[in-house]
Length: 597
Image 1: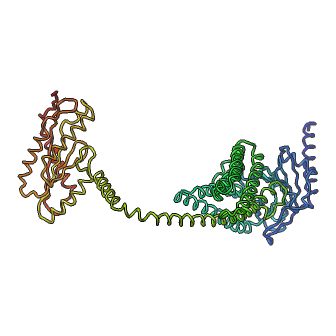
Image 2: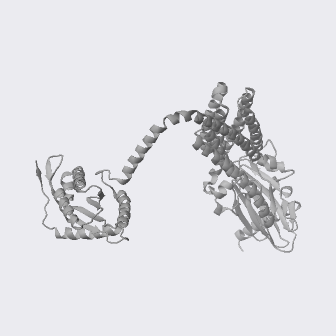
Image 3: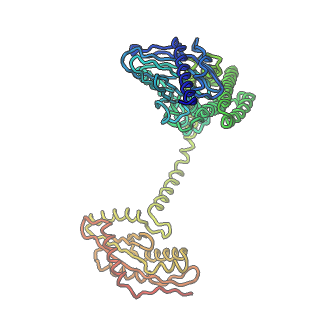
């Protein structure tokens, strides 16, 4: 074997010895787990190392001496930090049977978490986090969750690489699947209740705005929308259900939502407290701050994500404090509903302050600091909804009073209004049943009158006649003189048909250049021949166009007669149509002529 081969073998042996030394050095940090206990915290057996330089696992294994033991949960609360944080711990399956465990990071707002599972023969790599699409996550869950398979008596070493633009809270644990999913169902129930409440309040107030046109309800709905958008993303539900494809920009959505909510909160406060009326100075101050918040919203779109999140904390905390002071002042000035506003906003300010201070690592990470803003916002929005309900009742009372004051005036105008309504109804009926060009009945009007005529024909045992007329060689008029001339011809033909019809007959334009005559009380069918002859004579007479030209159209006529009580308009139309086209096929010698007067 050459010297190069010996050198490679020597380096491989040194690497194995180095890795074995790392495992022996961390043996004291081994967590022995068994199915008898459903959940174990990994914090007590974890060592951590924060580096601002991106490293691979091989680089990290060369710096195991740089890892520090976790002495308290606060050590894993790093706030806004640049770079990656590495965690390492050892797991030992104390049971002789194989088991599956779930390594769960409690904080859902972590961009990318990579879990390396080092075994005796091979290593396994899994990824999760809010910045990854669902298909790339180890488990499709709002938190970073990783399944780890352990053989009976097996010991593995875990290395976790955490990348996050937001605040880093790295508490994590290992749980049995049953325990994890039981806890997950409980958390999902409360989250669904919370977000359902936010959504219901937002939609309800938006509907109130649509109904009452009061902007205070719109401002509240928009404030609720921005806040819900941010909290949905922060809790991981938004990325899990709606926008997992945003990737690294998911965290930016939190900054945008909270900053937008802060701007809308100032608008809501101005409208709710009527600052333009009771405190013009505060009104101007809130308007100026809102302009700053709009600039901050633009900055949240353009700045690096971590700076956008830090700006979000400053904007949210300052807006909450500003509105609280404004509410206290308005309460002192005895502005209506100001006291309830102060109580509600105090609770929200407390939650927002806890949220911001925890992000900045000033407060420790625990249940209250992790969920304080959700608890505070839930109570605040309920209280403000009660206040808005009071506002709604007041507006309702004012409207009822105004309606009572206008009853007398409405009664005086009732007769005129009824006349106008009747006229309008008649006009609408004309539009619905008559052709706008010719003034004759349209299809709808024909059907309506035909039904009544057929019923009378049945009751009186008298046949009902239908005459269908189709103009011959009408198209050349449109082609030669234009559609306006064609419309003029149709109007003249309609007038001639109406003139020929008897009193009580109904004329209709059936469509295009087709016309229908509906005739009742036909005791002598021979009367129809006379009517058809008069129609042919009237329609065939020359027509003088507005341009001075004379035109002449022919007409093809088809007739039908109701012969039994079950006859319908459709049957009459079909029979008349067949007769009309039969006559049209026999008329081959007619000519279209035109001239000038």
